[in-house]
Every structure is written in structure tokens, then in C-alpha cells.
Length: 452
Image 1: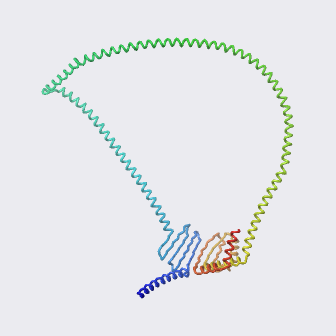
Image 2: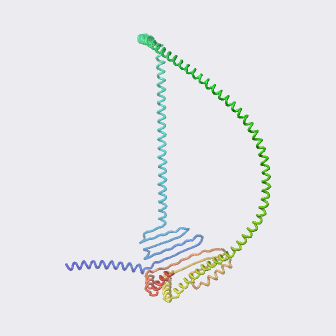
Image 3: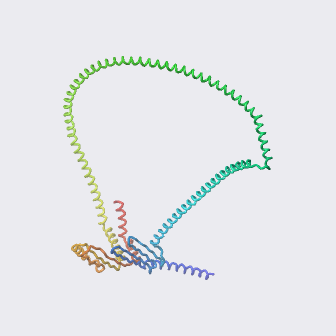
């Protein structure tokens, strides 16, 4: 039993150790296997750029291309396409096209349905019209058939045979009996009815005649009354005209008197007004001079106030500028003190050294640049070439510059290749974080930020 338990524990330990080993192996692979990159660019008539990033024998492969204002990104994992921006764009375009097709189909289906409905309505209308025409034809045929039967009956009566004489005799007997009944029974009844109706009409005529006589008498009395009222109105109008004539004559005489008196009064008032205007003009001239003198004194008294206000504004603006300069100088002294601190200096130096190491590790191991340039002016191109040749100690043989003294041109190509190892970057970062001076620099920077 104990051996069995130990065997199970042994198996569990082996499994855990293998899992830990696989994890350590993956971590070491991630840290030590470098990430390789490659960049190629070219500028002729169009610009073209291409970048590649690979890791672990192309198990992860990333490619970025830019050409004719289009960018394409492709990512492969274990040789299988994981992401493709072009396919996504194509898929989006396909989705848009499919949506458009669906919409077009819906529109077409609606149009077809509408056409079907219109055709059905047209067929129904035609059917209804046909039914109406058939009914009309039937009605006309019936009427024509009745006419034809009557004509046939007349023809039959005209062409009576000896065999149908009995039927004709019976029909004649029936017609005779009906006529006798009408003459003996219905005619006296109708005569009696006519007599009563005549009497009623006579009574109504008498009543209407009496009413018309009454109306005529009433109308005659009303006309006489109206004539009398019109005569009285005419007499009153004539009297009023005579009175108005007399009043107008009296008013004309009074108006002439009033006009004469008003003219005399107006002449007197005009003379008085002219005298008053002359006196007012003399007073106004005196008042205008006094007013001008008064306004001039007021303006002279306001000048020192304005000068004082101007001095106050200038003083306030100078104070504001002074305070701004003082604030800027205080900030500058704080920044200077922060940078001149020895601990901060050492921390910044360590940070700069670590950044330099990272740049040296990241920079491409292989670099080739070929440039052809020309300004169109041989003198200017020569001057630029002389200035670039001073920097030859920095770029060396990696850069090839070819001047063009005839035409204005700027073309070239670039190719660079390098690698990045995460383990080295991790070591540089850990060394920088563990440095005491760098940590104090971070603390001082936080305090300086709060004060600033």
C-alpha cells in the first residue's frame, strides 16, 4: 500500500516537474530568442515601405507594407494566417455588396408585387366592365324580344287561321264584358266624384276672390298713407332749406366780422413775437458763450483725473507683468535647484546611460542608405554636399550620396536589419530600478511636481 502511494506521488511529482520545466523553457525562449526586424523603403515616383518582424524561426511572422497610399498588415502564427487587413477590407466590401444586393432584391420584389397587384386590379376592372356590358346586352335583348313578341302577335292576329277562331271569339267576349263593367259601374262613380270635386273647387275660388279683394283694399290704404308721409317730408325739407339759407347768410356776415378782428389780432401778435425773438437771440448768444466756457472748464478739470487713471492702469499692468516674471523666475530656480542636486544628477546620469544602452541594443546591425538629390542649382547642391561630407565620420560607408547637378530630384532607398533580445532589455531595466539614486530621483520628482 505504501509503495502504491509513493508511486502515485512520484508520478504527480514528475508531472509537476515537467510542467514547471516547460514553463521555464518557454520563459527562457521568450527572453533569449531575439526578435528580428527588417525594413526596406524606396522612393522613386511613388513611395514604398515594407517592414517584417519574425520570432522563433518564423513561427510568428508580421508583415507591414505601405504602397500607393494603402497599408496592409498580415500576421501569421505557426504558418497559418491569423490576421489580414486586406481580407478584412475585402470582407467588409463583400458585406456591403451583399447588403446592397439584398436591398436591390427587396426593391425588385416590391416592384414585382406592385405590378402583380396592378395587373390583378386591371383584370378585375376588365371583368367588371365585361359583366356590365353583358347585363346591358341582356336587357336590350329582352326589350327587343318583347317587341318581337308583340309584332309576332300582331302578325298572328293578321294571319288568323280557321282553327284559332274559337280562341279569338272567347277573347272578344272577355274584352266586351270588361268594357260593359267599366261603362255601367266605374263611369257613374267617376261622375259622382267629379261633381264633388267641382263644388270644392268653386268654394276655394270664392275664398281666394274674397282674400284678393281684402288685399287690394289694404294695399290702397297703405299707398295713401305713404303719399301723405312723402308730402309732409317734402314740405319739411323745403322749410329746412329756407332756414339754412337764412342761417348761412347770418354766418357769412359773422365770419367776415371775425376774420377782420382776427387779422388785426394776428398783426399785433406778430409784432410782439418779432420783438421777443430779437430779445431771445440776444440772450441766446450770451447764454451760448457762457455754456461753451462752462464746458471748456469741465474738460480742463477732467484732464488730471484721466491722467491719474492712466497712471493707475499702467501701474497695474506693470505689476501683472512683474508678478508673471517673478513666478517664472521662481519656477526656473526650482527647476535649476532640482537639476543641480547631486542625487538627482546621478539618477539622471544613470537613466541616460540605460537609455543609451537600450538604443545601442535596438539599433540596426546592418544599414544601407542610397540617396540621389539635386536642387536644380549646381552651386546650392555643391554646398549641401559639402555640409553632408562633414558628417561622414558618423555614417561612414552605410550612406551613399550621389548629387545631381542638372535636375531637381530627391530619390533613394533604405535597408536596415537588426534584432532585439528581451533578456538584455530586462536586465537594463532591472539595474535601473534597483539603483538607489534613480529611486531617490523618482521621489524628488514627485515632491517637485506637487510644489510646482
